[in-house]
Length: 184
Image 1 (tube, rainbow, N blue to C red):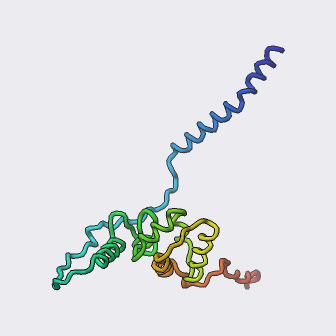
Image 2: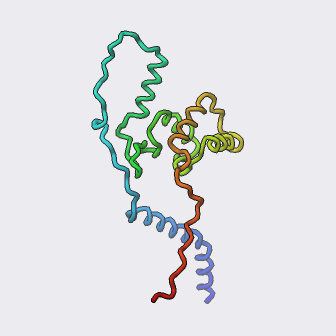
Image 3: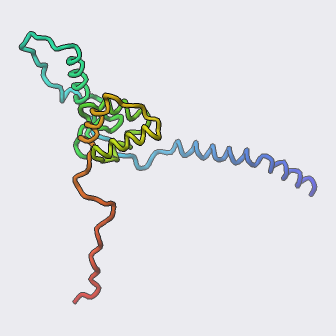
């Protein structure tokens, strides 16, 4: 009896090790299991289908370098690439972030997704005042830097693509219709 008690005490000493190995094995097993319900991927749009014919310039006047750069950035932001897709509403989006393609999308992607997921933007639908309030809150409490001249284009993009929804929805369902208990 004395010998069995000593073995039990020795085993109790390593219980945490055995338990952690079991948890590790369980996690490894779960990670290898196939996901039963995967999200539906967005449809990829081939880039060649949306490329426009090259535009020939008829004038010989050259654009200033700053204007050329702005035009190139705007074209790159709105042109479909291999990394674009159609979302459920039929809007062309960036496949990596889900942000709607448009002017200043790259700016928003660069400034906002440095600190938080783009899903935070996708689920929010605010007017300009509320977006400004959110930015000020992030600057005050989350150490967001001063956006400077980029704040107006960022706000323009956010209001255009993620402004208030047209449907009045207060988060509650409609009242149930009264039940018809007695039918004849």
